[in-house]
Image (cartoon, rainbow, N blue to C red; front, side, top):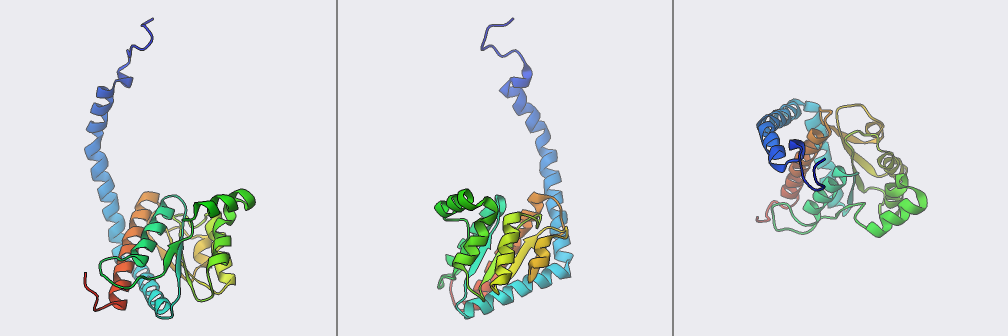
Length: 219
C-alpha cells in the first residue's frame, strides 16, 4: 500500500484532468454555440414570439406613461435575470434619462427568508405581489418550465389584483402561460438556451422601451 498522501491514480492527477478537459473543450464550445444559434434562429422566425414581445413593449410604455410599476420574479438563474433586467430599467440601459420603476421581488433577503421560514417557499412571491403591487402594475414572471409553484402562486395573486402578467417561458405548454396576459415562449427545452434567449429578449425590450420613452436622451 502506498504511503498516505501519495497520489497513484492518473484519474486524480491535475495534469491528466486538465488534458482530458482540454481535449473535449472544442467540441463542447462548437456544439453549444450551434445549439444557441439554432434556438436564436427559431426565435427570429417565430412571428408569435415577436408579436408577444411587441405587446410587452407596448404594455410597458403605457405602464410608465401612467406612472405604474414593473416587478420581476424568478428562481435561480431566472432570479438573477429578473434582477438584471430590473436594474436596466431603474438604472439605465444605454441612455442618460430619468429612472423607471422596476424591481425584482426577491432582493430583500430578510423578507425572503422570513416568509419562506414562516409560510413556506411557495408563498414568497405571492405575498410580495400582494404587499408591493397595485392594480394596473405589471408582473414579469420568468420560469423556463412555467411550472414553479411560487411563480404560479404569484401569477394567481396578480390576476386577483388586476395586475398585468407577462411570462417568459420555454416551448412546453405550461400553467403559467394560461395565467398570463402575454407569454414569450422560447422554442427550446434546454434550460440554459431558454435563459439565454430570455436575456436577449429582455435586453431588446429595455433598449426599445428606453428609446421610445426618452427619444431625446443621449448615451
